[in-house]
Amino acid sequence: MSGGVDSSVSAMLLAQEDYDLSAVYMRNWDTRDESGTDKGCEWEKDWEDVQLVCRKLGLPCELIDLSREYWLRVFEPSLRQWESGVSPNPDVDCNREIKFGALLEKLPGGHDTGHRPTTWVATGHYASKTWDSPTPKSSQAISKESLKRPRLMRSADKHKDQTYFLSSISETGLRRALFPIGHLTKPEVRELAKQHDLSTAERPDSVGICFVGERRKFSGFLGTYIPPKPGPIIDKLSGKVLAEHQGLWTFTIGQNARILGMKEKMFVVEKDAERNAIFVVPGSTHSSLFSSVMNVPDFAWIWKDAPPPEIDSPEGASLLLQHRYRMTPEKCIVKRMPNGILRIKCEQPQQAVTPGQVATLWDGDWCLGSGVIESTSVS
Image 1 (spheres, one colour):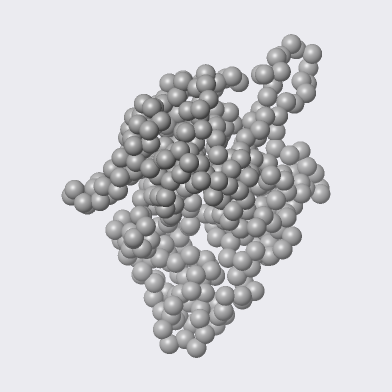
Image 2 (cartoon, helix red, strand yellow; image 1 turned 45 degrees about the vertical axis):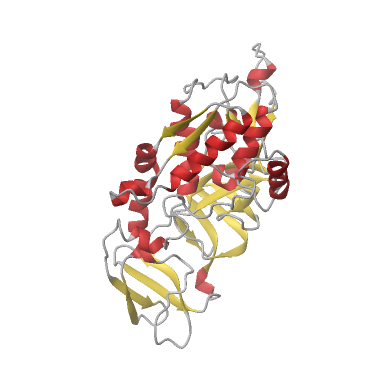
């Protein structure tokens, strides 16, 4: 439980069923660890809300401190990527490494990797899960239960759907996952919270990355960890140096570079780590801001042994792609190259695709997995 309305209603729905149920609050970050003072204990408010809801539902609850695991497995690797000019997605990494990684390891049955879990983990994600029962490939006697494999599916609320952020979790983690509100919309969740007099019913949704906080500028936050590394901002068309940046991490692809004295707005189109240079072009719709092909070297299929067989065919597999949250899924053709790299070619050119972003693939509403984009090209 996070202290928000979604996980509160998830707990309430499960409490109405026949589960041996308890709640866990994860402490992943504390700004006091940064400042060395008693200021900035935002997590304490969340923990208080979790305890209020649990008292209302008659559930035991505990706090598990995963701040060390979060630092080592999510934040520090992301920091190195930002410093090199890449744009990672810590929220995707957090679900894989912490919620369905470090947390599972600490809970009862933490090493439960069998086909029939004895413990389950429910979250307030807007996602769903179904079970697939493939046909046995041999005459070996295997129970139907052991053959079932979990499928990560989109939620009923397409606007709030969060399967993108869950796309890198393992099949083992997904097998143990429950998504109690996956069949509900956000308004329905809030209405249920009001009907059951939950204290979090009117609590605003959290936004942004947990360690940045809602009132802090992202670049300012990173500036406390990454020293300035000035370099040139170059007009990609003329080769002229227009300004100076303070680090590759201070801009993202497609961002307005806000260069003083220019007649037209200049937008970031490329970063060169070797030259420590940022390249810009005039206008947000310049052709060089668009690409049709994404190369993903380490795509992680949720069913590791069963990617779509068509990816190895000359025609490739026809799938749907998201390379950022809340974008409209894009039709694409996916091929696995001889070197193992996954080549994703979109039907329509995509604007401002950034190395480090997570490319997630779907077969309809079925999420197949994801991987980090290494590079892009026009064709």
